[in-house]
Amino acid sequence: QVQLVESGGGLAQPGGSLRLSCTTYGIIFSINVMSWYRQAPGKQRELVAFVNPGGGTSYDIAVKGRFTISRAHAQNTAYLQMNDLKPEDTAVYYCHARSVRNVDEIYWGQGTQVTVSS
Image 1 (cartoon, rainbow, N blue to C red):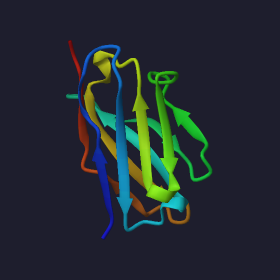
Image 2: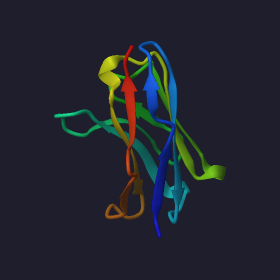
Image 3: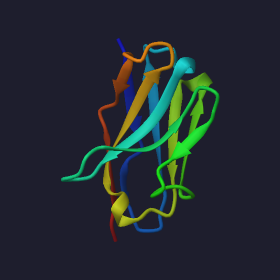
Image 4: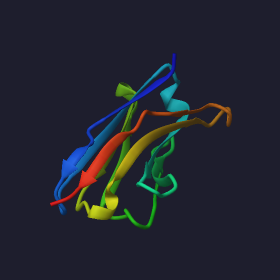
C-alpha cells in the first residue's frame, strides 16, 4: 500500500522557520520526482518546489531563496526547509510523488497545516 506521510507543520511567527518531512512507503523512491504543493483557503493548489531523482530542484518564485527542498534516499523521505516565513505562506502543504517511468503513478500525502502568524 502506498503512503506519503507528512509531518512538521504547525504555527510559526513571521520570520520563523519550519521543516516539513514526507516519508514514503510502497513506492520506489529513487525513481520518483518529489514535490511540495500548497493550498491556501479559497485558492487553487499550487506547486511550491520539486526535486528530481538526481537531486535537481526548482522553486516557485514566491519561495525561491527562502525554501529548500531536498531528499534522502536512504530514508525514502523528502524535506522542505522553510525559512523567513511570511503570513502569505499560510496554507495546507501537500507532498506529491510522480514516477519518472509511469506518468500515471501519482500519489499525494494527506496534507499538513502551516500557519504563519504573530
